[in-house]
Length: 246
Ligand code: NDP
Image 1 (tube, rainbow, N blue to C red):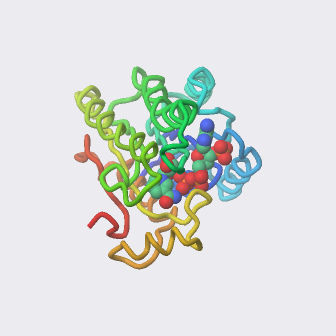
Image 2: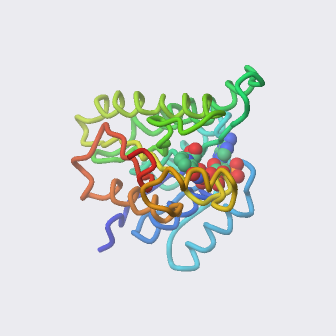
Image 3: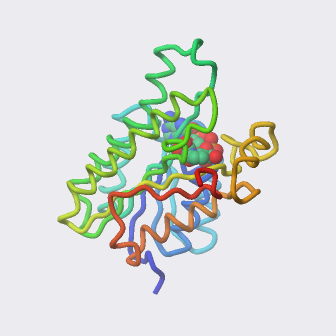
């Protein structure tokens, strides 16, 4: 029997980047997967089709994480149609990097709505009905502990908020055997952080390992945390960054 057989997983931002790799991996491990998109409908549907073509069970649903009602109703629809959610993966995120002096309140509102508020909204929508031994896994960033360089203030602030969320929620849900963890990737080759830029050269120069990671590297850790083997890990942040923070 596969590790995640009979589990239902809800993954935000599953159409591309890390979210796509996580969706595919959880499906390979036997989970039924619902993945959300806001802009990347075709890519999200392609991920779901690829999973289904391999005998898995996946669907792509539109849910802009900036809109609490849209995200909540996507989760409620999933529960109504498939059953209670065993594994919530809060993956969707954005990066806003620019000189601090040019930041606006709108930048703050946008990044906090997607990177922080949506994580809270999704957890709230799944928590009451999540079965015992459920999993809440959020994708943070190694930058919560190491801002690395300039133009990172807002992003770093948003990702640091997730450490408090993770600790608190682990204690709120722990009596039900539900684990709550934060995965903090370092440089991963995606649209957000392509590995062929000057920034990438700078980041590589700061890493213990000299190569960028892949979405699959992150997906492997998420699958482990989601599985029975991960049942004693909760309330913590696991940094997976090729030694950038070492
Ligand atoms: P990408 O930019 O490649 O992908 C971002 C994903 O988030 C897309 O699936 C996108 O979907 C989704 N998303 C963004 N905004 C919204 C929204 N408003 N509503 C719903 N979905 C949304 O980024 P990565 O795959 O690299 O990032 C995934 C996570 O990992 C993020 O939380 C990011 O902060 C974090 N991270 C990334 C690192 C890296 O080096 N790449 C390092 C550390 C952390 P759509 O296109 O449909 O909007």
